[in-house]
Structure formats: structure tokens, C-alpha cells
Length: 102
Image 1 (cartoon, one colour):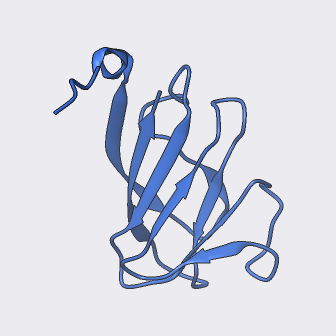
Image 2 (cartoon, helix red, strand yellow):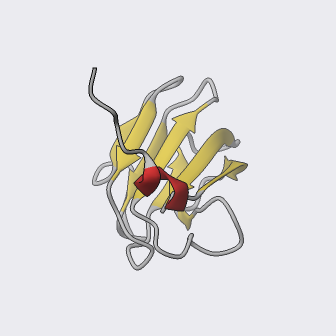
């Protein structure tokens, strides 16, 4: 069996936090700002509601992409690319788990 070199994994950083989506498109990340050197953003929709996401803060539910209840989203985006989320209903909130990896 060949030896596997895992030394590159020592430099990976991952931050995760629970966030709340509201009825307005809001940029979200795990900490107070996007993770420096971010290469990937993962979102888990823990709510019983559909959540919409977009690269634009002026998106609408009709122009945005949906994450179903219990669904996940994985994007390869660096920290310079904002990603916005909102709950899929006209009222209420949705609980999301946001993870960023560098």
C-alpha cells in the first residue's frame, strides 16, 4: 500500500456557525466577515422552509436559487464573492448552518 501525503491538509481552516435568514437578502458567513482565503462555502438549511440564495443583494425569489428544507448548498467561492440568503416566505425566519473552508 502506498503512503499518502496529508501534509497539505494541515493548512486547511474551517469555521462553522448557525445563522438566521430573514425576509431580506443578507450576506452571510460563519464569522463577522468572510473567512480570509476562503475556497468553499457550505450551507445546510435546518429550517422547515425553503431558503433562497443569490450572488446579488437585489435578487428576488423569482431570480434567486432555492435550497429546500433540509437541503445543502456547496459553492467554490473566495471571500471576495458575496453570497446572499433569505427565507422563502414573506414572514418568519430560517435557521442555516454556514461553514467556510480555506
